Length: 284
Image (cartoon, rainbow, N blue to C red; front, side, top):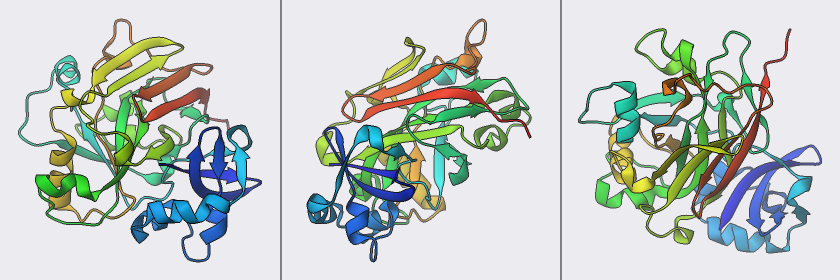
């Protein structure tokens, strides 16, 4: 099943995506399940989806896509998690995942513009698989990790590179408003099977700039869930952005920075296609 958060006729809601239609499940269950994060926490997504089958349906071109989970408790990002990307950055091998945080208000949805901030022109792309946590947990073992996953989505962990390089801490360059694209929807694990062979591809204006299989991650999804749940309690709706392959714009000669008018796409087999334009931050 595919679930999304979207706005229709000025109202933020959530629901199922079935073919070319969005099913407004939120309108049916809003009194007890106000948003997709709450639906995940309720532990009954499939049942809620069935309850919503009688809900009103809208063509996809009538909705405004929002980040899949607009209000996660936390977004944890895994850095340097493909060998080609580690090598292109010149970073050393490490025994544990490199983790940094992104804030919820830095996110944007499918078909919205990624915003290049007025203080920088070094805006980069990072296509990734997002993992959405379904069941809360602390000290989750690898063997149990996937049972704590509600679903997967495409993510573009857009980076303002000069701010990222101000110090050894990544946080400033990863949290400008409108730089983290997330969507269009979350796909439940039963639709995907083995993640390993699935291909991730990032394109800028139709040109392939990143490509990898998910089994090329240095730290796989169970290891990420295990590690993150050691230092924090994972909550329903939390997001883990699992890392980007090599080919980022900053490491090209000359660098390939995103600019207004560009179109950037992140596509993952069986998961979906996330497409965004690029625009400058408005003046004022």
